[in-house]
Length: 295
Image 1 (cartoon, rainbow, N blue to C red):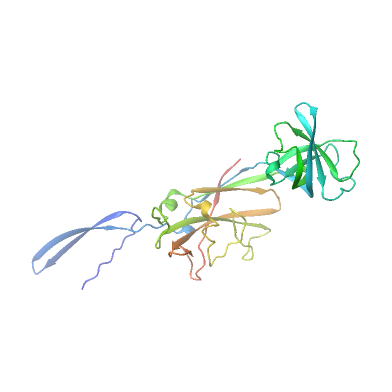
Image 2: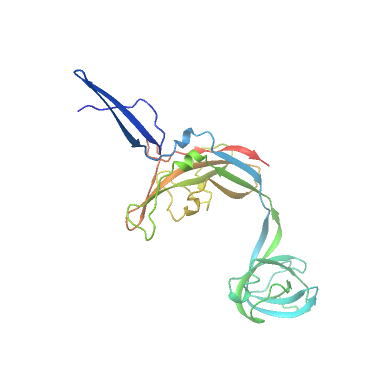
C-alpha cells in the first residue's frame, strides 16, 4: 500500500480537490477526489491582530458604610414632587454619619420597596432626634407598594466618584470562524461540542511575572492554565468576537489582556472541558491583545 503526503498548508473548513496521476507499465489513469478540511482556529500565540481598545469608562460611585434597616414609613409630601420617607435603622447611627444634606444609595430586595431599590436619595432634616431614624427626600416617581411596614435593606453614604477605563478585546474573524460548534436542536445530547473564546487579563504593579495570575474578564476569577473554567461561568463569551469590561483607574497598575480557546464536550451527563491549544506542558496557549485604539 502506498501513502500520500501533502507538502502544503491546507486552510481549515475548506473543500480541497486532489488529483492523482498514476501510471503502471504504460497504463495511465487520473483520479480526483474531494476532501473537507476540518475546522480549526489558527494558533493564537502567532496571531498579530488580537486588538485592545482602551477608552474612558463610566464613573462609579464611591461609598462607605453599610447601615442596615428593618422598617420604613412613608410621610407627607414636601413639595416639588417629593415626599418624606422615614427609615428605621437596626442600630443608632454615630455622630457625623448619615447627616442631612448627604446622598445615600438605597438597597433593598423586599418587593414592597422594589421601586426604590438601588436609587440615590438625599437625607433631610427632621425634628425627631432618635438616632435610629433617617429621613429621605424621595421622588413621587418611586413609591413603596405599602405606605409602611417591615422591610430589610441598607443605606450607603456616597462620598464621591471613581473614574474607570473600559477595555475591549477583539479577536479576528479567522479565529471566530475557526471555532468548532456541534450543538443539536432540542434536549442536550451526548457528543455535542463547542469551542468558546476565553477573554482574560493580568493586572499588576511593576513588571509582569509568572506569579501574576490571569483572571476572567467576565467575573475576575483566576484562570487555571491546566483546566479551563466551567462552561456555565463563561457562557457569555460564547460566539463573541469581542468582550468589554470596566476597571477602576490606578496609575500604578498595568494591564495585559489575553485570549485562549476552551472546548466543551457533553457526555450525556456533564460538560467535559479542555484547552484546545496547549504547549508541551499541557498548559493553555494564550494570544496577547495589542492596543489598537485609545480615546
